[in-house]
Length: 112
Length: 112
Image 1 (spheres, rainbow over the protein chains, first blue to last red):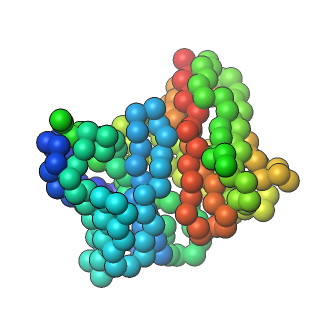
Image 2: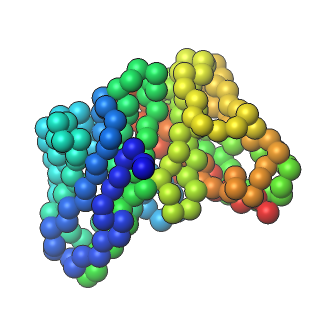
């Protein structure tokens, strides 16, 4: 079983819909990242969070440390939001330093 | 300001050959991490360097090696290439070990 699991794997939405992508992890973490990857490979860091909730524009990320779960929400989705969204965690075991463990990603397609 | 840059963008090699991939971090960033992303999967951690020292290593064979130079740029070397080494190789930089990582566009390697 992967240490970081995302759901759903694929998501198709209509423009304007509210979108939720989920991430569950099975290890102790010091931080969780949400990343966006466009076709061609470039990755953009959206959020890094260790507790609570962060908001940036139409994106909201939440994390529940006790339940080992995080969600990424997109409000008023737009076709330009189409991308792969990846959850990644940094283990808190000290020996892993700064390296990240990634989920497999959620491929989002927003139709006009 | 320039982001993380990687070269080359694309590369085709044959089995048994050697490859060197290069990464220049964001100015002022002292940590560089390397990840391998096989098609359809999330990235996998290969190495992390900080202040020219290896600070983390993922579960990759000894054919993979890396180094960081005094100007904090980095090289990833892969010897005796296998077909399974075909992937997108991502470099990420951060100011310190545990800070947000900023990703480069990646080098797409195809081994024939």
